[in-house]
Image (cartoon, rainbow, N blue to C red; front, side):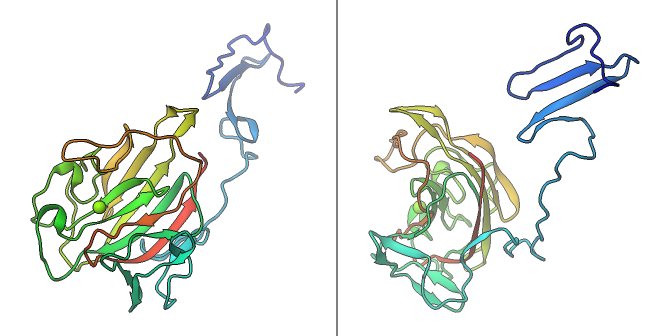
Length: 268
Ligand code: MG
């Protein structure tokens, strides 16, 4: 600190609450800028600032990175990390490296609970195209078991846009329709930040950033409320809940397939 003598008391000090940057000027007139971080204040371009941990990426976008929690990779013949709820075994079919929704069996939920996270999911809607609108290849990926990123066969299949494939169901229409064809493997990469409640009030809404088949379809979208079906033109409101919940995959009566599901926990 010998070299760094403040000119006056914090001359040139700029404090931005929240982002917290500070500026100092040395006796020699050199300007120094600091940023507040979790590990304390650091100079801009400081070589000693802790570097982020090294993570070996998968060799392809479909492979889990080394720090991910693998929820399903098709190497098991049953769903060891999943349940039908209330500790009942998940009843979806597992074969050839994928799991498939079984009509009437209900959703499957991870045993482990998660809050804010990065989630990778691959899915395929049925090769045999039947039904239309919401009846074609319907399933869904639910964060905390509550907030649905819609899965639907939206390849040449008209439905209400806030319920098409990759919609935040009933709340947000995807920026583009990046849907693959039936039977093709598709992917979601979801960055989710959970909502925060104080009592019955939501004090921070949930946010979603979603890539569908590598294409950005939701760019840090604030969720205005719940995503639960409440009638033809009604959607559920926020209802207070805990910090964590399961990743849930929906049985909507169509044999939608999933494989290669992994997750990385994020800070709230
Ligand atoms: Mg659905």
